[in-house]
Amino acid sequence: MKNMYELGIPVPANKSLVVRTIKDVNKEQRERTLQKTEYNVFSFPADLLVLDFLSDSGSGTMTDLQWAALFHGDESYGRNKGYYVLLDAIRDVFERGDAPKRAINMILSGETDAQKLMDNLYLTSHEGGFVNGGIHQLARPNVFIVPQGRCAEYLLFSTLGQLLREKDPNKEYYIPNNGHFDTTEANILANGLHPVNLFSKNLMDDFPYDQMSFRNPFKGNMNAKELEALIQEKGVECIPLIFLTITNNTAAGQPVSMNNVKAISKIAEKYGIPLFFDACRFAENAHFIKEFEEGYKNRSISSIVQEMFSHVDGFTISFKKDGLANIGGGLFFRDNGVFHERFSIKGDIGIQLKEKQILTFGNDSYGGLSGRDIMALAAGLYEITKESYLNQRIGQVRKFAKELAQNGIPVVLPAGGHAIYLNMDKFFENTDMKIDDFGGVGFTIELLKHYGIRACELGPFAFEWDKKTPEQRKGILNVVRFAIPRNVYSSSHIDYAVEAITELYRNREKIPKVIITRGAKLRLRHFQTGLRPIYKD
Ligand code: F0G
Image (cartoon, rainbow, N blue to C red; front, side, top):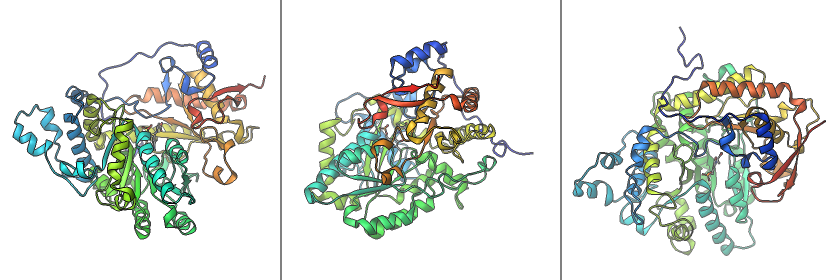
């Protein structure tokens, strides 16, 4: 008899004890709302939706343990207790593998022994890793808590941009990535640097849906050959940093293999260039390594995460994804590592970053977050590395993709960790839809209008095809993404979405082309432009 895994059915890992009613809204009401919100799905009131797949960012359900931790939130302006707990949770999750200290338990269990708290939490000294502690965090800061991922990107790239310009205003600088997320790309560009996407060659290759539980081609990998070619062509001086995004959100949410992490790390080391993770979905990525990469089957998620992070010099992260938190982000780099050395040009780079953090987000112990958020986030970091949870999570995404594929819908396979992506080139094959007609946007408008489902175009509209050179356009995929919030939807929600997408596919000839009516030239325009669908009759 086959087990549920072989049958592609995720084993339930949790149950819901609180529910929220979905409003009864009809098609005409949604149509009127679309008109009033310039057909931009970002502007559509979420309360009027049936299902919301716009983003998995901050939209997850927290666990009972997180809610319990939230009550311990400390709103003190300086050095709230959650700050210490979070720093230690980060050491636990990213550096300690199978030997976590779980200092958080002292707070959650109401420890009153002051000496014990001082010795094990408040005055502990750490150096040499991603999270200096005690006096070392003051002398050489390397932890920057911020409200979300893009704040960490802003801190990093605005600081580097300025340093590099001052060093040599005539040089051009390039930041390679296996796939820059839109905010990363925008922060790099806004600071006068050039983002470069080095997607894996096999990204859009076909893959049989019935093989998804058995093998994985790690299509999120960075093309290592192209990376070396880029370094040789531009010169080491002009590549300030290399980024690896795990999982690769822009490349259809595909995972990156440990082998690729090692290969890229080797290249980075060879040329003395710091390697950073964009670590938003690190736990989901670790789960793929465990499932599909040789030698990792019997390893814990925690030890795989530890190994992954041992190969990088720093990371930016949005905890709104794999932190299972509703808010939070951070920038971390290795104490006295390559990054620290390379960019401590005008004094300690950490001190410079901290100055900017205080100027823009808040002092280093809260970084623009409430004490409650910090506690929920610290507890969340332990929740998301649980294997049963990850099995259910990734199993649900996989099942969504399989059901679409069975209905003949061109979904990118295998499914990634947090979302399914429709290949809109294939979706509109043999119709008169061209890439700059923004068919993916037309599809999301119709899906919302008819069925109350919100998805997100992450193709030529979001990545601004019309503003780019033919060379830059090579870095754009034509996809629509359905990002699945964590612990929110059940199989009945997924069934509803599969049927709706299938019905639209059958009627794809009727999907309108879309024109931009306002704000085409804005940066990160997809969050705010006005649009108009052009219906055929
Ligand atoms: N990097 C990646 C890979 C991301 O997916 C995101 C956000 C960010 C950075 C920025 O983080 O939103 O906290 O500022 N992705 C969300 C999404 C918005 O829907 O994919 P943020």
